[in-house]
Length: 267
Image (cartoon, rainbow, N blue to C red; front, side, top):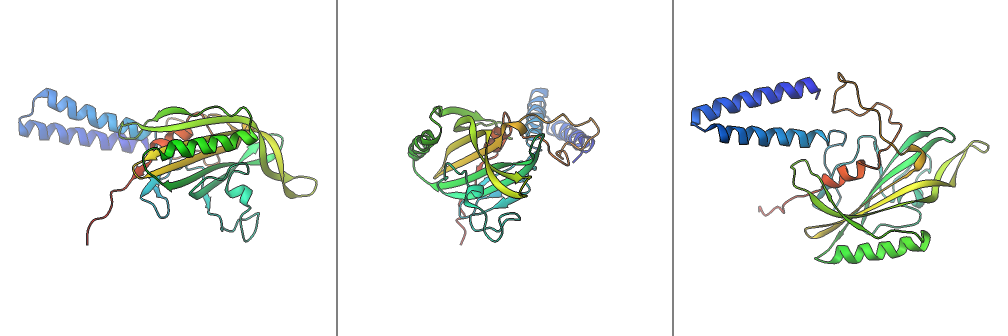
């Protein structure tokens, strides 16, 4: 939806609201509260327009939204256009850390000035759990990461903003270090693992009866903010060909999109 369409829709909503409050005899303070609430919701929703709609993770009531640059998703027995009939295990999960309850891997390719295209990843996992399990899982993953990256930092607690304005709490850590990525070797024309300076972010959330895990991984050469779109560009669409992944903001947006559906008690 374009900026103009969204503003038009908002105008008609506010006009209808004004008419309704006048007929109901509402005071100006109630009208202002309702208008302010809706405008706040619109501002909150606008930050999430770079994400797809919710994806429910198989076998769980957990849904999450991923960036629109990630058009390709894989499970552990998926085929892959490069790997063949079965995706490489070191592609579908981080080669140095297997996420418990793994559900999906998203992959995209971004231009590197020296190496052609390089991959960037989003990984998602869900584990049934109870109170306190998120802390235990986070500690176990932290210990495993330290076996590869001795300078692994401790998890920090962060509040991710949501479209509704009610934040959701996660634990996260970021590692910036050399790590393997599969890239095209120009001399052999084959995909080979190569250690590149990279960023790995791991997020863990205790959500109702589940522990949700999310990780992002990309070479540092493709990390960075994209230019802001022109004023007449439809705000809901990302650039046609992404050139960067903004790991300073994208993981937090995805973290804020998490939802757990209520159990179906009908029948």
